[in-house]
Image (cartoon, rainbow, N blue to C red):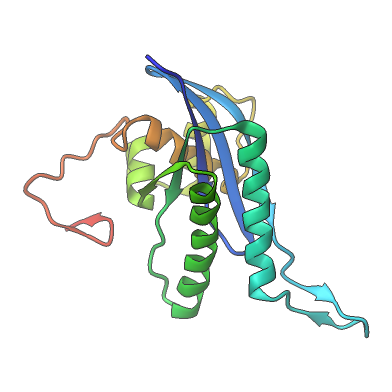
Length: 186
């Protein structure tokens, strides 16, 4: 058995969550977690709030993940797939943040696995429609943490746990005979 060090990423344009765990057999150990925040607004020379340009925000995500990868040396990366929002513009922006996160892993020559939110929640909580608080609580329990991680860190850690469980996890989804649409059984 070889130990895996897995970096889980919950991509977001304002806040990108990350979590690193170690998996040896069925045993999971917490390494670190946190968030990479991009400045959503900064002051201009005239003192007015102006939006930080998208490329600058993507660079913050890229550089932040480079630092995490260099510091904690993961062997694999698991990232949450983008879901379709009601607002197409939000979906496109989230997709770009996700692209920056995937690029960071690929540039560092790490393999990347992708999971839907349904798969992650099913794996960690046993219910694909679990609430954020339930995910936080189960991540805390599975990794024996003293307190619940922040929602973004918990989602990233949950993604890493899902990957450690082979994408199946505690509540393995038997999808044979079912149709899957947008990450949901129909």
